[in-house]
Length: 231
Image (cartoon, rainbow, N blue to C red):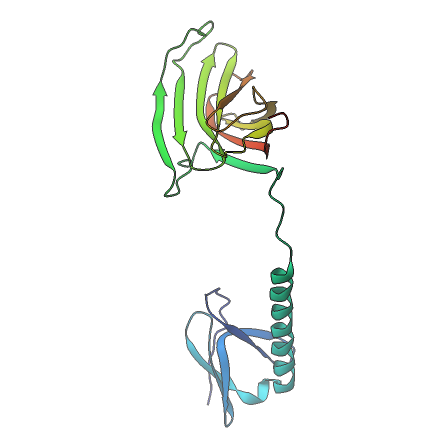
């Protein structure tokens, strides 16, 4: 009799266990294996029922391996439970927004605006109408607006940062990453003005990039510390 079986390493949810074969190979399975007579019956990670000759399974090593995994999992759980709660005051945060993906798409966050064309007084050298995109978010701190301007000698980016946290934020900085059609990537970081923001206040940072190539996308990250240094 020839019995064919397939090892499929496909992650699933739920409990798993392991079979250790005589050659030392370890097979992860769904649930526990069942030894009956000359065969061992088990469920692969993809849910397929399988069987193999019991003689190719090292039962002692299988038990030892599973016991070790269980002990490590228990130790990790106990360590996590015993870990003290992290102090949140003055804890830096880092939030990223990517222009290619709808920003802050969670249920509590709402995107408002799709690259709106806006005209302002800062138009010297401007060769395209400014493009403005706005966002609302329930996050503690977030990018609320991006204004992109194309000039004869490159690009201008004005980023607005808003705060929801009642403690406010200090030491605020915005990092910008801009990708262009010629394959180049420009990276820069500037402090937010003002560097301290109370709740519902808005700060800004303005970037200029000397680049003739067309803009592909932008990405921003905000760093700051909850709480005001000089309330």
